[in-house]
Structure formats: C-alpha cells, structure tokens
Length: 197
Image 1 (cartoon, rainbow, N blue to C red):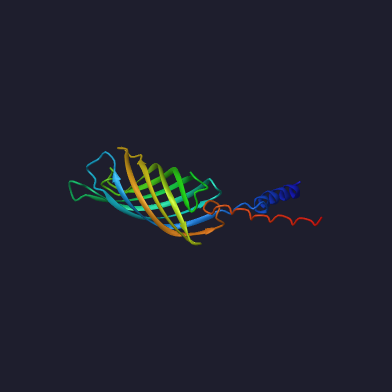
Image 2: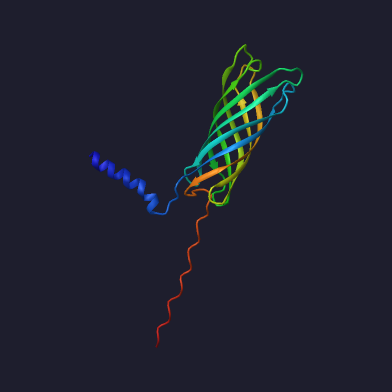
C-alpha cells in the first residue's frame, strides 16, 4: 500500500513536467521605500530600506517575504524611533499573459518592531500588522528584475496607525519562467507535397 502511494505521488509530480508545465521561479531583491504616515501630521515622511525574497508557484499564485527598516521622526520635536517590518504576503498575478511585465496584487500579515517613544511604551514593542498592495515586476534578461509597488500597512497598536509605502526594487531571479515567459507559438507545419497524377 505504501509503495502504491509513493508511486502515485511521484506520478503526480512528474505529470506537469511531462506536459510541459513551467517550473516555479524565485527571486531576491533589494528595496527602497518612501513611507507616508496616514492621518497624522505628528510624523515626517521617511525613507526605508530592505529586502525581499519570493517565488511564483505557477501562472497565478506566488508569495514573498519582506524585511523593511525605517526611521520615524517627529514633526514637532527631536523624538525619533527605529521601526522594522517583517511581512509575509500572498501574491496574485493579474495578467499572466502580459510578460515580461507581471502586474500583481498583494495581501498578508506581518510584525512591526517599534522603538520607544513611538512604540507608545517605555521600551521596544512588537505589533501585529496587516497589509495590501498593487505592484508590477519587470523581468529582463535571464536573471534580472525590477519592481514597483504601492501598499498600505496597518499597525495594530494602542493607537492604530496606517503607513502608505511606495517601493522600488532591483534584484535577481531564477527558475523556469512560470509567470514571466510567454508560451512559445507552435511552429507552422509545412503542407505535404501533392502526389503526382
């Protein structure tokens, strides 16, 4: 029985490859972000830096993990705090046939580590976050990529706060081209020569 189940699993894994299915493709990229706090004139706009790593598992679905660090600064005093986001996102490819562009929607959960005083405590705190966004990746060559994205990140603090983040990314990719490479057109078939009468 176990032997039969193992054979069935192996057959299921081999079927997409035998049928010409694309392998997953992954990437890593460095990111820079412009961060604008929503509905609060007590914080200045800030610039963040970070990195992301992700993968498209097929033509439609993917995932990415992001790390972003920024410096919060008060608009009215010299108060400042470090803030670090760790985000886990699901990605949905909005146009699988638009290669080499990959427009996508993002949604997910994360954690924000905030230093005092903007942690609203006398020490650093870690808060849950949730986020959503729209963006696009642009693939060129065999291993390069560029991305641009707008997202909203809400920090579930005692005073709930939302940040609007505009991000640019530059990175490297690898894999089988499941979402970024168009399916090649079939080669034309030459007509058979007419037989002599």
